[in-house]
Length: 233
Ligand SMILES: [Zn+2]
Image (cartoon, rainbow, N blue to C red; front, side, top):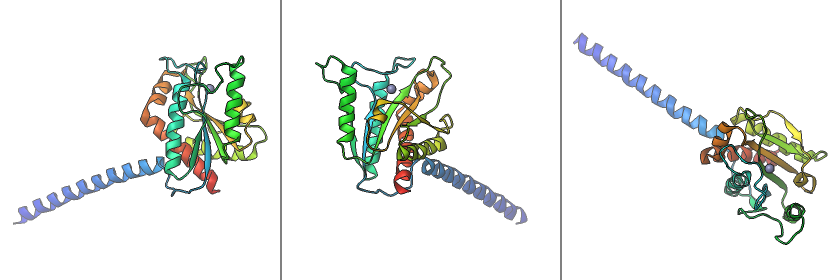
């Protein structure tokens, strides 16, 4: 009788340990997903321009395995756009396919492309602009996301800080500071604007991550959380 009772206690303890382990696993998964996905409720009426850099004959940077920057910029722009719409924003994309924004007959295609980009951004009626790019550097070990804003754009600086902080909380390789960037797309925009270099295509490991749909979704969630935080404060 004593032996049976002893066995019963051991059995109960096993169930208890199993239940605690199960709860710990469930809690870890919940914490992981809530850390990445922002716990904000949709806030309508915000309009945002998402600019996928390069396009057409201008592929931008080329990855070590041959990935073009322009295709990844578009992949990230579409993903971020879909998430922003999910959270109640109206989204304007500067381009939604692989074609360039320049006029095919223009003698200076770069200027034609930039003029078109500027026109779309400034006529969109949007509150903010986010331009997406991928980086490349001769040193293959360079890695991590960087966020740029135009000199003198105070709100752009606040937006950059908000997005950079959010990216840093999920991606350890990201730079923990924002930088003034002398880019046409930032300088010619008349709304608070940032340019995000999502990572380095010249780094084989980072290129592989940047190409993955899961990484893209998580990265865009962290941009979205930064944007929502900017709109909230
Ligand atoms: Zn670029």
